[in-house]
Image 1: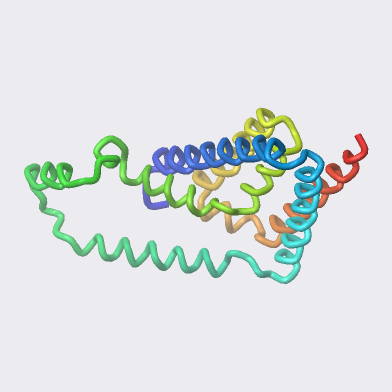
Image 2: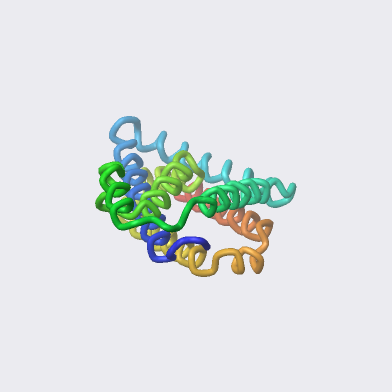
Length: 196
């Protein structure tokens, strides 16, 4: 909401694309390390577990509302501390600041790098990453990557473009319940495909 949307979107999407590819690679390699039947059963159990866990969060109201409020407070504090600086900088001061910046920020926008790193490390170990690993272990990894990237792109674009107004229109509870039902459907589909 405070930074150029195209930079935030580019940073978030690039992190999610990299995370999806890495997760699918890990899922593709898993059956080569342990038996395909065992990875299939683990993936099925994970889908059922995530489905029940997400439904529990939806019914009990344990969501990310507290996390969102904390992040908003941190962003507000960071913005207030930045506005306290002197805005009468000269071109020489700007050039000196650019020379002292770390290597990556010389070539990429700090906003893009921040969006990338927050998204990448925030998604590490998340249900969606583990589900991607499970799907890639059991299904065609190219299809999993393509579907994962498409889904992440749609959701992230809607979140960046819609921001807070979209969040006020969509109930966290409804998202959690829908996600839980989808995980259970994936688990059931995986369970039923055990015989084939």
